[in-house]
Length: 83
Image 1 (cartoon, rainbow, N blue to C red):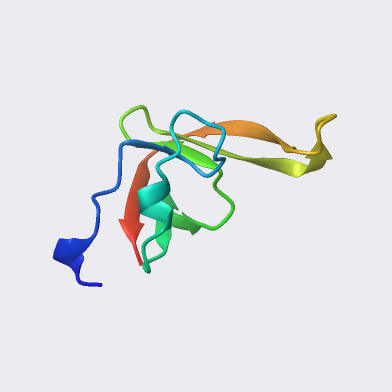
Image 2 (spheres, one colour):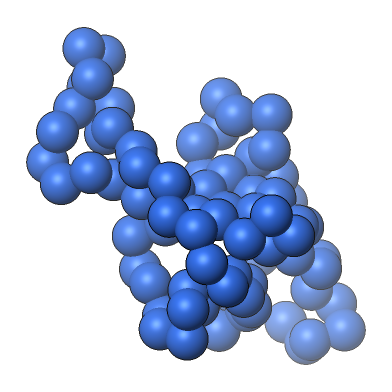
């Protein structure tokens, strides 16, 4: 898929399909999404917001009572891009 045919990445995106910020069309493309947080690429991001400058990542191996990972919010400079 060429760069011009890719859907632009939204400002706020979540991996979880139950979230109102989940955009299925972005995940159905062939290209992978990369997140650079404070100049370092992260591979464990569950949700991000570029304009507000935060990401949500799992807090170790802890789980809630429904089996989903507990998330912590980290603040800094966020860049989203296609790999």
